[in-house]
Length: 110
Image (cartoon, rainbow, N blue to C red; front, top):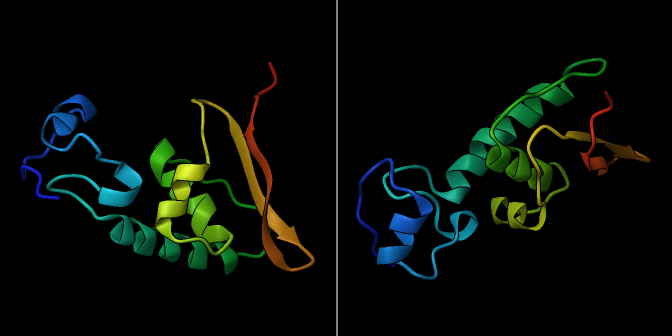
């Protein structure tokens, strides 16, 4: 699929050129491919796993979706399976030393 190589397009504008476009499969025109986002997230995961104790990460929703996918060993495109609302709590952890999703899209308490 050939897309215009212009940064700052809205999803609606991208769909004009590529009606079947999906960010987790096709990436951003003029930006990163899903595999590049996955590699960036892999570096964050490696640094996080090297820390002794809990850590907090804050990022854009799409990156967090890729982070969850990569945490459990899925490809970056696996982020499409993790719906994420704004301002919710997600906790990644382990089940018997196996990376796992403990909480996803949890509401914040007032």
